Image (cartoon, rainbow, N blue to C red):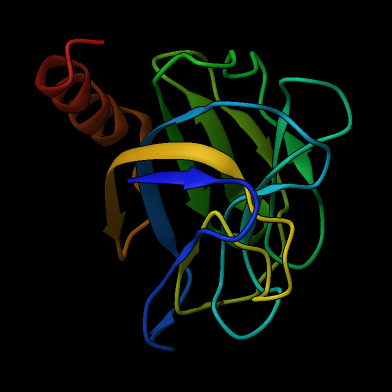
Length: 156
């Protein structure tokens, strides 16, 4: 799914997704604008991945810390971003690189909005290929299984 960064986005019903949860997202940022959304909860700023202060950085949030993805996902390049929402033991990861670990906060996701920020704009210009949401805090070994599967499936 491709979103134009102006008025296109995808929203599902408001269905709670409690922590811990692990997200495996295959997408690319087409253009970059500070604070534009890759995904957010539907019905409140609970969880998000958003474009951060310096291009092409991304940040992850669940009520506390906004942690930057390092290394950043280059523009116009598909990658696999793994985000483990697990309070003080949260992780943010690009492909098979080492995780950034921190306390993202304890907010639970209320639905899911792709390329939209709290139904209020800041739509992201991005293209989504795949999303896996698991109701567990996957460890590194499990993450590697999913990441390698997605890398093979999408020839990344």
